[in-house]
Image (cartoon, rainbow, N blue to C red; front, side, top):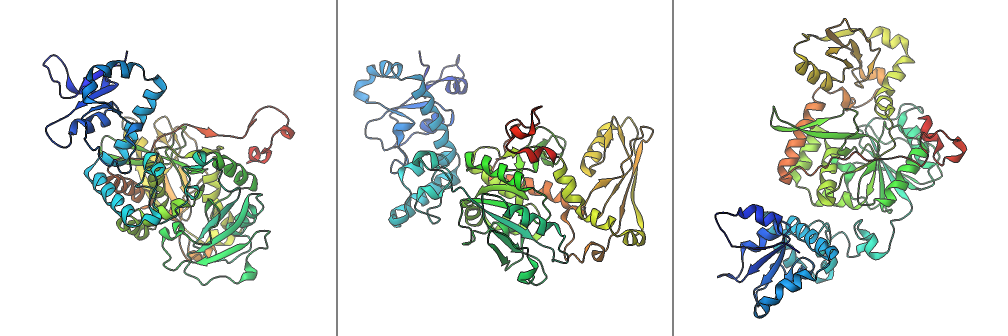
Amino acid sequence: MSQVAVIGFRANRYDYREMLHNATFCLVPRGRRLGSFRFLEALQAACVPVMLSNGWELPFSEVIDWNQAAIIGDERLLLQIPSTIRSIHQDKILALRQQTQFLWEAYFSSVEKIVLTTLEIIQDRIFKHISRNSLIWNKHPGGLFVLPQYSSYLGDFPYYYANLGLKPLSTFTAVIHAVTPLVSQSQPVLKLLVAVAKSQYCAQIIVLWNCDKPLPAKHRWPATSVPVIVIEGESKVMSSRFLPYDNIVTDAVLSLDEDTVLSTTEVDFAFTVWQSFPERIVGYPARSHFWDNTKERWGYTSKWTNDYSMVLTGAAIYHKYYHYLYTHYLPASLKNMVDQLANCEDILMNFLVSAVTKLPPIKVTQKKQYKETMMGQDLFRLQDKPSVIAEVPLVLVALVAFSNSDSSAQKTFCEQEGAIQKRTYCFQFQLHLSTGLCFGCLAKPEYSFFILQHRQVVPAALGNTSRASRWADPDHFAQRQSCMNTFASWFGYMPLIHSQMRLDPVLFKDQVSILRKKYRDIERL
């Protein structure tokens, strides 16, 4: 028998809130006014409202189909309500309760959303040719996140493929964010371009030239089987990588940093996974967030764990609609912050997508050497120039002594600096200035301190790069911590969602013949 709560009934021996949240159906009879906040209380508690108010116009009924979230009763047939409720199938009850939660979160959870919903409905009345239909308003993610200025065709959004019986286009556009000049044909960006172009799903490659140096001549770019379009960024800022460029003609965007190391096989597999989850971010480098009780703020971590909540856009695939949403939905204050710091644009994109979908991103096949390889490229180039290394002095940056009793402080410092930790010890390691790469690490348990060293490398040693790697900036990590809290403040809550799901190819790492595996090259990485 379904549980029913009579909204408005209070007695000393009952806890009103407890009853409300434990009830399946909530009676909402006629009040003394045109509306009742008891109705909104029922929505918030995922309790299906049973309306007993003939002639009452439900809020936003012009666009919201309340038959999907409430039971509309007749005051004159009050005694029939119990039998009507008992006849509702459990599947229908679940659907009703899920819809109450969606409507509450989408349109009623704050005064701001109520006002925005009102304004959007008025806009739809005025501009009928681009007005949102009933499906958009009544299905996740809702009318506030589906901007009609982008398109009037539902198939252009990643949320309605199943409803329309459609699939996203079977090709992608790669967007490579370039910030350093081309000085050598062996630079990672050129190797990346060739590997991506070999993908069977690649339609075209766009190189976003955000470097201070002039565009390279056409002959400097490698010959590929797909078009390569070089776009010079007008403002040279980080947010420009998420502009809705007209050149992007596919549904999927493969976003890449210039120093990303990915094979063709990895690209193919990630895109295959994305085709099954077109509304999410799918990619390789994962990060996570956490609540720091001591500082009472959100924290950011890059520790390798089974738990993550972000997939960085340095090697990720997502729907091109998120470029439009990033540009036109997010406030200028957040984008200006990203541009001023030249940091956090990937975190902001993860915030946006998670807020829209209420889902975490998807990490594909574990590749621990992604970070090390990416960060170590400059080091490998220096290793080919021993004379350069000999000329660069070692500089002692910090000498930190720890007592075994202060393990918590030591652990925090080690995690932030990327040191190798064993028990309560941090071990001596060298940190390359331009990359943040830990190399030559020692594992001697008698050390109760570590020495943080790095080489001061002039830009010329790295091939006249116009911009230092972001990993070299000591404020990089602190900035990302600050970004997390600023973004959460604007959204009004923490939209990021943790996940422990990782998708690997079938037979990945299984002890069977390599010939039986479709993505066999991934296991060698």
